[in-house]
Structure formats: C-alpha cells, structure tokens
Length: 142
Image (cartoon, rainbow, N blue to C red; front, side, top):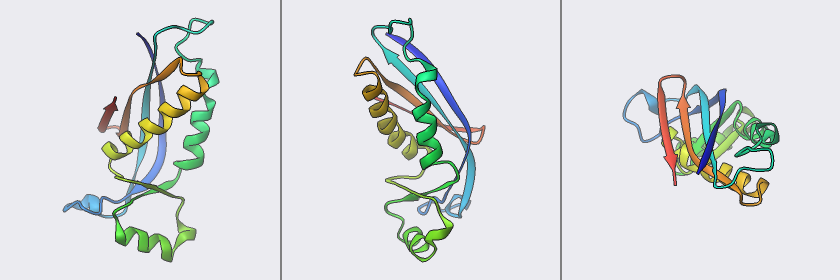
C-alpha cells in the first residue's frame, strides 16, 4: 500500500460541547487542522497516490462548509434554539458529535467519498487527524 498526506491548517471553527461539565460547554472556537492520509494499491500514471494539485476540491469543500462555521451537535437542543433564534449569526454545520473525535468520524466519511469518486476508486482516505489548535488531536481510520 502507498500513502501520502495533505494538511489543511488554521481553519477557524466554533463549537460548544453541550454535555461537557467543564468550560468546554461554553461557546468557543479553535483554529482547527485536518491531516488527511490517502492510500492506494497502485500509483497513478504520474507515480502519485493522489495529485495534490488535483484535490483542490477538498480545500473548497472546507472553505464552503467549515471556514468560520459553528458546529452544532444534533442532540444539542439549546444550540438548535440558539440557531433558530439567530440564524443570521451562524454559518451552521450540524454533525452528530461536535467534538474533535466526532468531527474526525464525520469528515472521514465526507473526504473518503470525495477521493474515491475523484479517483474512480483507485485511492481512498486511510485516516484523518483532526486538531483543535496545536495541542489536541483526534484520529480516525477505517
């Protein structure tokens, strides 16, 4: 198996951990990073797992959906009320779980699908590392 990595950094995203007993339950944000590890069994005609110049669609997806967004957990009833009352204040992105771990699972599925489609199934996402600022990371792979 061949692998390569692409890192997307300094993506400002807000969230609140509504089930957390500590300060993470308050509205706050991080400069997030996503490290994507791609894999394939056979390199392409250029000798690449993926052509980094050919995956600009991932940066566009991040920009359109996550840059300056606020993550809302599906189960956060108060967050949903806040969004309903002030929709103009949020670029909302709703996920099952808005922790770094939850975002890693969600984004793995999103990016894996995109890469498989773009490469006609030749390449896939092997793993993802999601960073909250520069100190805290969550990993997910299938």
